Length: 119
Image (tube, rainbow, N blue to C red; front, side, top):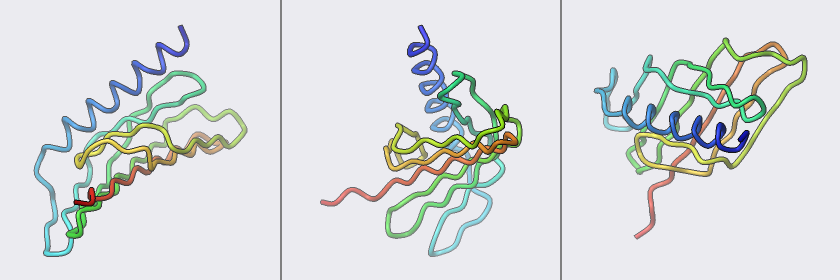
């Protein structure tokens, strides 16, 4: 049951991130497209909860993309918790190049990086 809740949470996050990434970006230049102040979801793999935060994503001209999501609303447990290499959705696609850190105080930061596929 716990695994089902986690899977549903991750699926919800991926859908939300992909949906919201279609909105226009605030800043554009020749080097990158930057999306800011969109909503994102951060999973807590220990509790199955999803925390909502602010997005900062950058799509570089070389085809790589980095999505950063930060929230101060996660539940602090008194211990730092971190996860790596989980499935994450960005506006450039899905990736396992990911990192999530929830501090002892409940500050959460998630980073997901997508590299341009080689031809």
